[in-house]
Image (cartoon, rainbow, N blue to C red):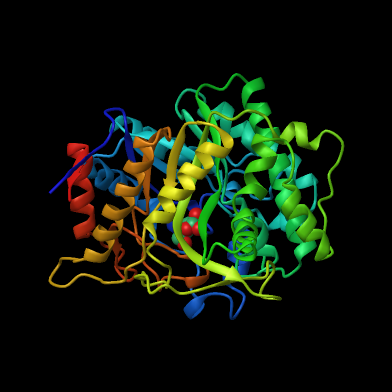
Length: 447
Ligand code: BGC
């Protein structure tokens, strides 16, 4: 038996995103987003699901805040739906949309929880996509204008801000692999999108400071850990590229003000390059206050000629897998955190997402999700090890509060610590909810 005790000032929380939970897709003056379009395109989403209703949190946010109060969290990370604020992406502010988030934030504050707000968790207004989306630098201006409205509205109420959630997904997954909205398959386009997200991030951080907005701002890239299969240089290099796609490509511009040479050279061999304009890199590398890290999984891999974009293949080590098929790899969590800390310096880090997919539902009113409890324990041990090693962890926010619209997987994959019955929208707290509640209450757990 051992006690895993967390620092006294550790913040505990949960995370969600607008399109995944809100529903009310055509209410309150909301305009269409790229996810409305994509999810209604046949063949894109498992079972043809969409976010029209989702968890209906737009109407049930008070109940959801009540659930979080019972959980005892310090912090709730949610995202604002840009098309609720600007139904056409630019132009007139839709006050009804702004008011919804005031109600939500007020409810959180009244119940003793701090809001952490993500400005972009993937629901780009469709009107902007129609003009090229993130491939068009005009979208950067539109994003800055949207962010400015939100900063002014919520200054003093929201103290933790995140510009972008998972820029790798917004660029490569959505525009090269094509699995997410808008579903393009074009590597040069994806590289352009990644660069424009970086510039939009920098411009927004700069604006945040100029406006004198209270609080802290950061961003939340998703990382994986890629462990080399052997000590051969070829395996090490292949893993470095596979990992660099997530880490260096999105961290170096922000922390160092340059794209990583080893990745730039490799991508040039694939015929693509970053189109950098004068002043971009200075803009991108504005100092940020904290880093959000989303971590779910990792793998062991090795060199294989012509395999994928990076001559890299995964080698299954027989790790346990969650129901979505991802390795349970807590060692990778520890390694990635210590790697980032060594490479980019000791910046305050919030784990803005970490969680697992297990699909069991209620049996006699109870959800026995042992797998999720086990995943949480293993990842919190890894996190604790990183804290012991000097990584500056400020908080841990599990993904997700609720089962919700899991993007291309629709409602078939469940990440919540609270089960949602999609017919009745009834919420049922899972066993993992009670385990997490106890851990938060104690600030430690026993293994
Ligand atoms: C995203 C979430 C998503 C989760 C599980 C992250 O990629 O930020 O929106 O639901 O992982 O796939």
